[in-house]
Image (tube, rainbow, N blue to C red; front, side, top):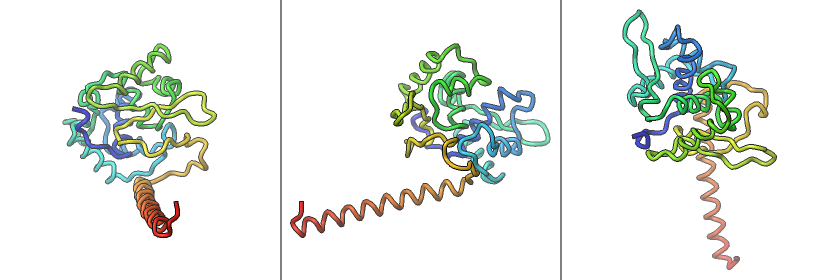
Length: 220
């Protein structure tokens, strides 16, 4: 069952997204080699965030996905090739796989953005069709795979985020509006998450200290 799957890392979801994307856009070279997956994962366009993953990091991500049966190894040829098996493992239709893949590649998006960005993977008739599949993913009996985020100030539409990497930490603004677009390495992202966790612990400790001092001083 999908709900029993461990949370996937950013790189693991990126690898899955690349496999789904290239399956539809460059079918002649699919399944993909390790080198193709590294290039697709580090691609500078149609990716959010842009990352710089090493060959070893991508291979590690592939190996973990293989252990979950979400990626399968292709036999034959001089080099090993890999294909995605997400739809079968998660028990979802190709339309839902396409929507998840676009979120894996580009982060949280509105239903309208998802329709446009998934056009090469699946052509949805209208935005209502996209919303229908998103709602199915959100209300899935074996565990929600997506969630509709709260509407941001000034935004006209809500965005959707996938949950295969666990609960979203922050409903961040699109990367296009955030700085110079420099690439972020997988290691740097892990370090940032660790720093956030440390800060949360420190804030919790300070809160407890202040509460104790107020109690000792008789302050409300």
